[in-house]
Length: 115
Image 1 (tube, rainbow, N blue to C red):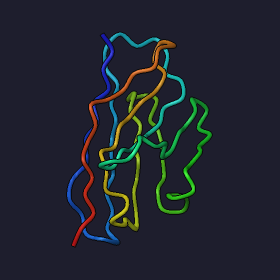
Image 2: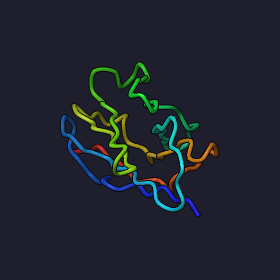
Image 3: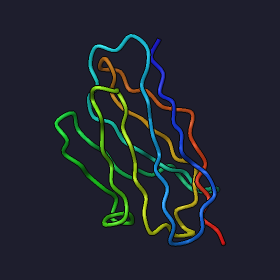
């Protein structure tokens, strides 16, 4: 059974940084495009960033220049480096992606940006 497990969330002050990790485990034959979404209280889930198997990245306008998505295919892990964090980045961040041609979600990790 395939699982995605996120880690790295927490409380950070405005202007600070966090790095989220998403590790895939289980019977994995292929990993396609992976990404991060986030959901703030009372709001819909929104796409933050994606990265293809070849390394092509895409970002929401709200995080361009501040967030960087990357992946380590040997470790079946992708990362979201978040810099210059703002209070409006506060949300539960979910990793998701195509593994063995099926889309999987992680359980989410809370990111809180507050002084």
